[in-house]
Length: 158
Image (cartoon, rainbow, N blue to C red; front, top):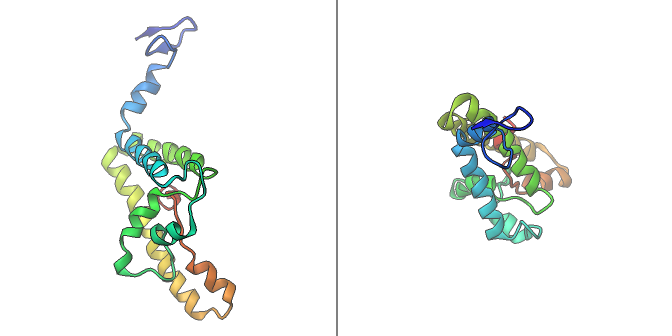
């Protein structure tokens, strides 16, 4: 790695700064999360089309109607996005939030932080959803609380 024509330390002939290459190399957990998001998008077709309602209801996380028999939804909801309009933003946010956490704390701590925040978000929305849903007499509030949520935002918002 040597100084390029503009005085920037480059990793290869394409002009990628070596510090960027090193940072990417220090983020295997982030790269894994991004790869899984892309794989699941290709598998579900959400890279090109909106997630069908029946699939959303089977993989999403519904705060009000969550049961222990649906624990798999905590994982599936983190990797499935609603469709092609949301996928790029999810990828960018995971790259930024997970990448920054991983550079600062290391892979294991970044993964624990992501999943810890993800689980805490769903636990708290479940409790709030049940409490509000039980007290709410408005049909619209009940309907919103029953809607399944998908995407990694619960994990990277923390």
